[in-house]
Length: 190
Image (cartoon, rainbow, N blue to C red; front, side, top):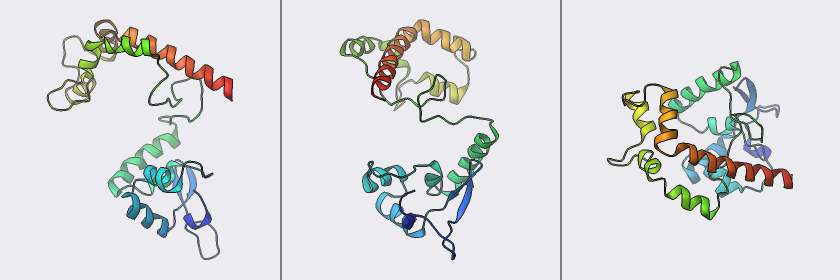
């Protein structure tokens, strides 16, 4: 959370806390909340990166961010928080593990040759665009309309169709190779 000035305290100097994911976390000080909204429009990530600096040693918890969201956002986050605390869903891990819950970087260390190969997968990029205007995004269409395409009857058939029709298998193979390079590098420097 940063220095003590960031944290709301009781009259006896103890921290004011609230429940987040089944644990007690400190509330941010009113002055901190005001500065965050004044300087970064309530965006905690930008506040931490642009004002606090990434080299400061402080615990970054989503409990801090949770306090900076709108009431509607807090309500939804509360449902997710309860589900995490109850074990209904799992939260991504900020550590390297061999399971689905390891957070991955936004980009992976692909080579120039791999990038050039990916750029030839026009079917893949045309079917999974960022969905602006009249562009297609198969995943967004499934979310909005369900499995209405004749080739996409359920999750399994959709995965099989993407793998065979959009060079999905080749794309995943390239990303798996890049992921392994990232893991090998991580292992060599830790």
